[in-house]
Image (cartoon, rainbow, N blue to C red; front, side, top):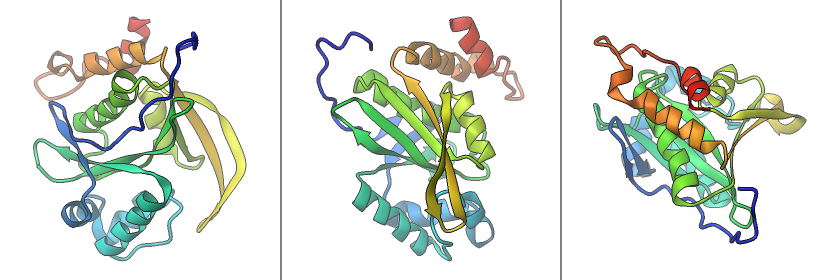
Amino acid sequence: MLDLEHWTPRPPPTNAYAQGRHVSLVPFDPERHSEQLWQALGGDARVNDRIRYFGWPAVASAAEFSEHLLRCIDGGQWACCAFVPTATGRAEGMASYMRTDTQHGSTEIGCVAHGTSFAGSTAATEAHYLMAQRVFDELGYRRYEWKLDDRNTPSHRAALRFGFTFEGVFRQHRVVPSGNRDTAWYSLLDHEWPVAGRALLEWLDPSNFDAHGNQRRRLQDLRDQAR
């Protein structure tokens, strides 16, 4: 949105329930979702590896995982969504709206974690579509950010795949338990969303998959076509 003559501050995004074909966005409930997420992320053997770029100290149980997450939610105005695939009915991933600036229409998706079976799935792609759709189509935000530890290669790939644009790296941005964090910044803007959103919908359409569930067209190809 470049014409700001009639701009007004936006309501903050919430973690309200949203239903897709393959997944639901559900408000994070520690009693219901902590153990489910702990197991989906690999339990004792894998959780700390999957969340190593969160900037948290190591956690040893589902209860500790939940405590850290709730501390962030309560102290940082986070709205945490659990991702519940229709096929399983259990939380297998999560992400939060955070660092929201309602005055200027900007919010960030962060604390993103996908379980082993959820990562790379159609349900995961739809979950991120639903989160972006809320930001742009429902609330009218101008800017949607994705910030990540520059060492986090899978997160770089995910941001680019979903249509975010790389903006640069804040060097020596933070001190985290593992040492220094350089933070890479990505963004998706309101005037870019129509192309990115249309490509996501076309990718998610059942006609884009063969009988074995393999994609026929990539998201990048669909964005190029939509342009």
